[in-house]
Image (cartoon, rainbow, N blue to C red; front, side):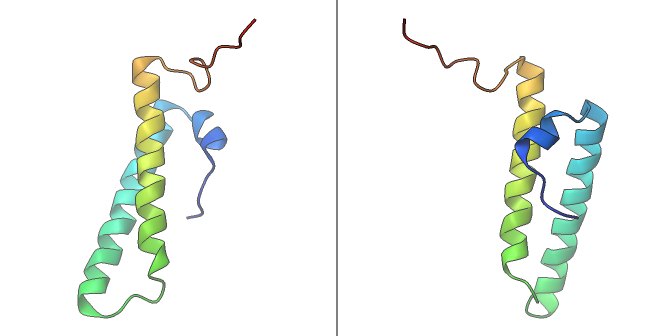
Length: 77
């Protein structure tokens, strides 16, 4: 599974985001189990998965709160 940018994630529905979270958590769990048995073949993948999971959860939470990115930025007149 490749990493997605925030803009692409914001286009997804709530169900798709929830599914994405489940997939990321499963992959993260599998990597942690394998890491306990042998050194990881790609140690950076663990960090990337954690960041992607946080990104998806943040976007899901923004939707719950009704926050739109950039809405708090006001332009001075």
